[in-house]
Length: 149
Image 1 (cartoon, rainbow, N blue to C red):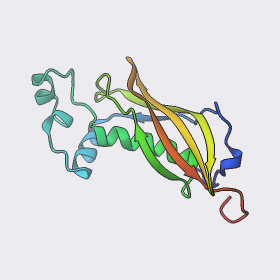
Image 2: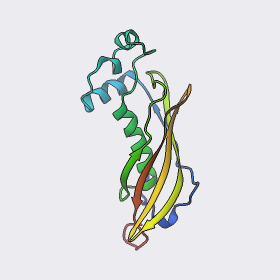
Image 3: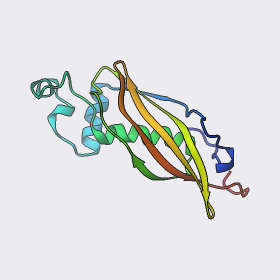
């Protein structure tokens, strides 16, 4: 992740976020299940996942939301604050062996009092197409005042 902080004034509507690819390995799915305490076997056991109707073990919501946050965070920096996530909807499975690529673009920016807001359209893609979203993240960024930007 970049060490520089983006300021609200540096954001342009329509600007694309740098996409990030997340390979879905068995290791990543097992670690995510343990980290967020979602021990449902559909997320780490192929046999159980297939018996439930899924094609293979697959990523859970918290892992996928974390991918969105990681991608947005790289854009807004550590001083940016994620205020809201909307429209997060899983459309197709994100299964082991696939790669999830999270993408985004700045839909709009505005000011309210002393806060600089950005609304970022986000979505995830895998080999089958859009797998999650599109949705929106609203965040605040620091204003240029010479201290954090």
